[in-house]
Length: 200
Image 1 (cartoon, one colour):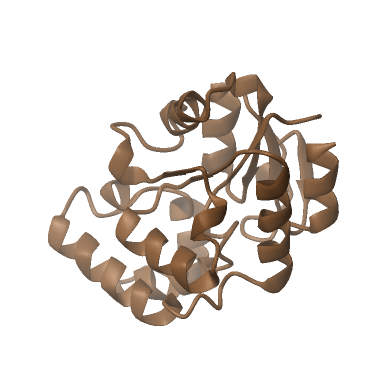
Image 2 (cartoon, rainbow, N blue to C red):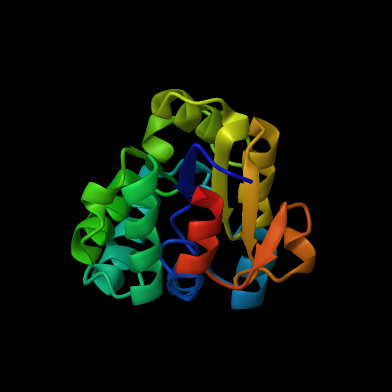
């Protein structure tokens, strides 16, 4: 596929932070195990997980930010891949996370200026797995959804992007290959080589 634009999911994709999220959620939700988090909650919004409880959501974001605010969850290879993409095409971030947790990591990793569009849960009415986030991203990028290449790490995100009509590169490191089987292709991580191919 030759993409007209590239979109990156945030948690677990751009930011290799799913272990951090698992830790925070298991600390906050009595009886929740890491295995249960990855089995049923990874990729879902805080509104879904906490049933819209604003105080719990704010606490979760604060705990998360305290751990990742240095930008270390975005590794050097991912940074290079995003930079390459931004040199060639419009680039979007499309996340089920809240803007208050996305923006500090983007700033700390030095990638904020690489993104033409940053779309978070704050910007949509219906979050992933609904297609609205990727449909809105394509609209803001000025392209058809079918011309958008998406990096996602959960089946929830794959469902959202596929329903919007986008091409999906599924990262297998969060929930495994089997649950990511609906992606158009599967990879372990984001690399410069994969982005180069999508841009060519």
